[in-house]
Image (cartoon, rainbow, N blue to C red; front, side, top):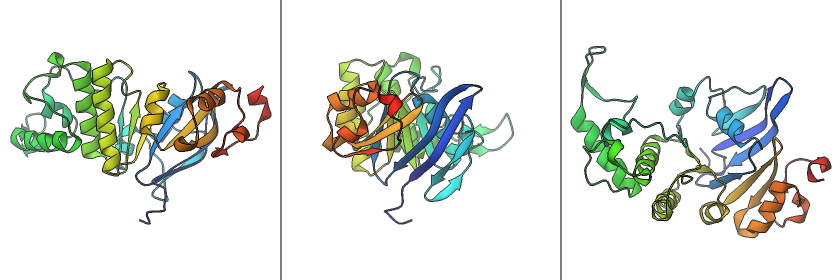
Length: 268
């Protein structure tokens, strides 16, 4: 695939719930190796957008292209099979299982397939888990420890390492540090920077503008169910982004911004 071809391109993605327009005409593009941030107030359409591009819900209209090929995800499993890994705020981890069991949850390796009595290949899962953690820089001293005894930061790191280990196309992180302390947040952010160095495309949804400016190449601003602007992080500042989110600033007034809609009502 040509390196200039977007990893993901979205055209006119729309989702209505009866008379509620959760997302209308969303256009989006993610370049190879790019880290994009999605920002906006609660109810701006961010969560709907993520559910649509990960197959949790289906759009009313619009299209999703992965490596220039149109895709239709009937479920999150379809998206995962296409190489899209998502780390939600809930993490989707099993607290009473150890690290390898969580990393391979739903993808267990087996020595002998006997239906519900299949014999798992614990050695292979442990070895591959160690490799995945090492690749992302995650350090877990005791791989046999259940997640129940781990901190929120350690759990988040395990979830991200799992996503990085299986992602073939891109990783989506939904508020990855919302419930973490300062030190744990810094550790997770270092892992995300490591993914950038490895050229792993990533979408991060975050309310933390300091984090957004430190970790992203481009910022996509959602407002009232629309993507209203795409801004190069290096050519903007937090005040401009806040203005776009609240409607106090028009995309035309932000250097380096690509205006995606023409709807003056959104800015008054």
